[in-house]
Image (cartoon, rainbow, N blue to C red; front, side, top):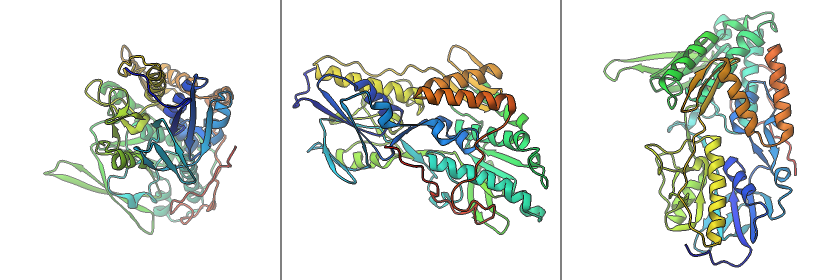
Length: 457
């Protein structure tokens, strides 16, 4: 392959400071004749797999976040810009940000995905998803406001609604949320209230497929469902949410199960509905489709070549959750942290090889396995060559997540926090923050980004 002929140093612009973008930048750190600009609308890297622990009061936001400038400060060839990409001119090789335009020789797009409500975006305010720190803090506020409001409520029907939690989606996020809320209600908070018995809470996990954790081995899915049941979670599979409507007592969730010929329609009233049912591509997917003719799948992820470039533009790469990589096996590579890390490192090394005129091999994903936690001492692990559950799986999950945390102080803090929680069964971040902190129906209502994290430069 011919070397890329561009003025030196070769300018690589990376959009997104998640796992794939960050590891691409780190791999290009100190590379000769390459300068890197990393653009992100946030000034920190977020460890998304542990967001649910912020949402349920186990960890604080700073425990799973690291400032991008601090992570990359030792790489003098990397510039970090806090800005947002809004458009692209692939012919002129110019990326348009909200506040400026920057030219590039190579563009790496790693902007990830957001919540997908399958055409029912009106549910967003009622049933928040979990992708950002603000989402997690809002979710945490709603969960703990529900218990506080139930403590004051004298109407049995309204109290029941406050103590009803509906989680939509039985993938890893939904399973982890359901398990964590069950531990809160049935263990952590059990002695904290005087007018309510928190163990009377109803925690309902809804999944449209025939089992929870659909991508996992069926035996592990069954063990996860058994663990959830032991915790007190009611699992409903083959069940779809068809409507969410407000009422005086709470939000009425309409559920459809059964068969097409004999459907079963049920309703449940709940004050806390949490969304974990699907994702859709970030807006940069559409920009690439409109400006560069990129093909996208049904949720907007960009179809990529075997080297993660897009057809017709070998200098534009798409990696991470935004990429639909269908060149290995019978399904796209999963949207998990190990896949994102491997893709980021691969693209960075591929780019360096291209600049040096060396040949490039297609990407091959090395699957380290799948892990999901249900509760304390309850998890499932599929490493391919072996599958297991229970306490050994829980410890494997703990060490895997500690390993992928970025900075040493984060690893130490999280290990200490988990150790403390393990032996005391306490959660130290059970703070209700943001506007509407008073436990009322209004406070638990319309979802808005109330809590803004301080910006660290």
